[in-house]
Structures are given as C-alpha cells and as structure tokens.
Amino acid sequence: MTLAPNSLQARDIAYTVHPYTNLRQHEQQGPLVITGGKGIYVTDDDGKDYIEGLAGLWCTSLGFSEKRLVEAARRQMERMPYTHTFAGRSSEPVIELAEKLIGIAPAPIRKAYFVNSGSEAIDTAIKLIWYYQNARGLPQKKKIIARQRAYHGITLAGGHLTASLAYTSSGFDLPMMDRFRHVTAPSYYRYGLEGESEAQFVDRLADELEQLILAEGPETVAAFFAEPVQGAGGVIVPPKGYFEKVQAILKKYDVLFVADEVICGFGRTGNWWGCNTFDIAPDLVTCAKQLSSAYLPIAGLLMSDAFYQVLADQSANLGTLGVGYTYGGHPVAAAVALETLKIYESDHTIEHVQAVAPRFLERLRRLESHPLVGEARGVGLIGGIEIVKDKATKEQFDQQLKANAQVVAKCLAHGLILRPLPGDTIGICPPLIISEQEIDLLFDRLEAGLDDALGVMPMAA
Ligand SMILES: Cc1ncc(COP(=O)(O)O)c(C=O)c1O
Image (cartoon, rainbow, N blue to C red):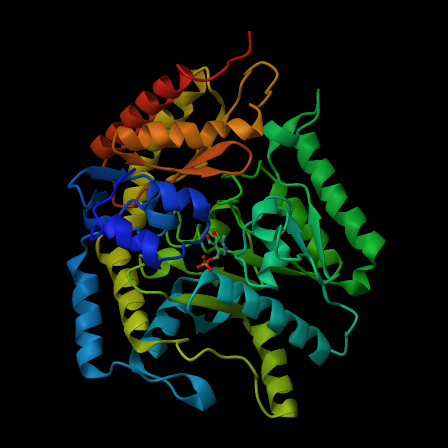
C-alpha cells in the first residue's frame, strides 16, 4: 500500500495508537477515516457513504446530524462551560438531568451519579458496592458474579467482569483479584444441551447461579452484574423466565442486582430500559452511550434509595464519599444528555422503535435461511447473527478464519458498517431513528455481504 505522505491515512499511521486494533496490521492497512454523517449514514474521506449498522459503538441513537444536540452544547458552552460536582458543587444541567433520569428510571432507582464512560460507571459501581458492604458491617461480602461473554468495560476492576472475553484480559495480567466469578451466558442456541428444552436450560442456569453462591458462601457474595441483552459478547438475548429466576435467587441471598444498561438503555430493546423489557428491578443501573446519543461522553450510575442511604451514612462516618472524576457531571455533556432525553420524548423515539422493530426482527430472522447463519436473534432494534460452518451441527469455522470478520468486510464493500463479535457473531444495532425503508436497505446489504462471503468460505461437505 502506498499512501501520499500528507494523507490522513499516512498521518494516522504515523501518530495514532488505536484501541482494539492489531497495530502492526494497522500500519499496513491504515484507518477508515470518517469525515461526515447524516441520519443513519456516515461518509469516509473518499466521499463513500455507509449505513452505520452499529450506530458507532451501539451509541448514536439519533444518527449523525441532530442539530438540537449541537445547539444544546453551544448554548451551555456559552453560558457556563465547566464546573464540577465535587464537594457539593452542582450545575443546572446536572440537576435537571438527574431529575429527568430518575423520572424514567426503573423502580426502585432514586439517585443518579455522573461519570464519563460506561467503564467508569462500572468501576464506580464495583467500588461503591464494596464501600456499601463495609458500611453494613459485612466486610466479607465482596465477591461479584458476572456471566461468560459479558462486556462491562475494561478498567482494571471492570475488566475482571469482562475477563471471559480473552482478548480483553490476555496480556494484561487479568484476573489479579480473587473477587470475581462467572456463570454461563444465557444463549440457549449455543449452550443448551442436547434434548434440553428452553425452560430446562433456564432452570439449569438458575441452579448454576445458586450453587455458585452456596459454594462461595452467600456471606461472601455482594453483587451480580448483567446486561439485559449481552451486547459486545455476541448479542445474547436471554430466554423467557431467565431474569425472573435469577432475581429470585439474588434476593434470597442478599445479592445486589446491577443492570448494565450501557447498550440497552434508552429505547434499544423497545422500552426505555432493558429492565422494562425483561422485568428487572435493579439495585443499581449503569448507563451511557444513548444517554447523549454519544454526541458527548457522559454516563450514569443510578442507585436505589436503600443503597444510597447506606452510602450517605458511611460518607458522614468517614467524612466524604471518596470517588469522583474531574469531568464527571460535565455541564455541557449533561446539557446534551438532557436534550437527548427531551428529543426521545418529543420525537416519540421509543414508540418509533416499537413501530419499526417488527420489520427489523422479521428481516433479521429471515437471515436464518442463509447457509452461513446458524442463529439470528434480537429484540427491539438490536440483533446478532451467529456464523456457522454447519447449520445442522452448529459447528463453527476454524477461529483462525475469522469468518464473521470476513462477512463484515464484505458488508463494508456494500456500504454497511457492522462489527464482528466473539463467538463468530456479528452485531446489528442501527441508530434508533432508522426508517423501515432504511431497515430494508441495511438487510439487503447484509444479505449481499453474506452471499459474497459464502463464495469464499470452506463450508461443511
Ligand atoms: C454493556 C457495556 N457496559 C460497559 C461498557 C463500557 O463502556 P465504555 O466503552 O464507555 O467504557 C460497554 C461498552 O461497549 C458496554 O457495552
């Protein structure tokens, strides 16, 4: 590859380090430089348009040209560009945003704490859970359970929850803390046993969770973290009844439920929260991404009053609640998030998702007739397909082949951006503003990409 020395590509290679990237490969291939966006489309520096089939990183719910968010940021920057939230300092956008969020939050959530990213929200949740258990006089109660293939960010603590995804932990000496455990991910397609019904699968997973808590000792288990739909681990939609059984067990052993709504929050599953879709009553909620349609970084850790009261007493005992980030509760990001929530209401975004989701899910499920697709699963406007070599046996391709990445590359050539995920899956998660016609176009392009990939894949005989 020869690049003009002054091209954006050459300068990116010269100066930039990219996350989740094979850096040597990147030196050869260079970046895809996105220079513009309109609605559900983004444009590269060659002027080629793509459907953003993953809404960036599951986040740009309102697409790429929402002027009201630009205006909200400009207004707040002019008025008061920065203040913090340490030591009781506050700002109007933070107060209004907290009030609005609590107004729509799933019961029994009553308070909001702001940070800058999903990872920070998760990390803070872990710290505050330990603080909470110490405050309750239960210093042994510190272990946290997550699911295999969970994605809860990659800070050192949160990385322990995500650790079953090898690429996030290998090379980083994780795990280094013996406080984290994992149970099976609720993918009936992949982990259901021969002859096991879906209901039996749910019972088995519930039993696995209970046995783990008992084996560890309930007095040592503090919390369970779960994405309502597991996103970055391969879009795993839980079977019916799964969360009902899980919650009953957690209650029995005084284990907190942390709902990681970083992807699901704000309409993705067809309701305000994944918690609404799956009847979850969480003690804590993490949210980010669609909170501001990703126009500025902001995330929230929402908590029940019962949890808050313990923190408040302990902060009085110790003299302070010793957490906080310089930019947490940034007034400009809060103003943009507040405007985002107002747009969801004024533009009836959740109702729109409910209206177009049947088309999305119908086109998604149709993919199951494609020879490369073992399962197509989804809810609301989030979907995933699992690529297999043999549909009858569910056998997967050799992982070295990176079959899903090959499909994604073919889709890119057809003007559709998607993302390969663990378990040879592909995530589909367009901006929530997508129309039915655009859904059709997205799936037409995805089908074309699958057909192209089929031509080059070593299928089972
Ligand atoms: C469910 C979930 N939690 C947490 C995170 C981490 O968020 P961030 O990348 O903003 O740190 C992500 C990121 O994709 C996520 O999907």
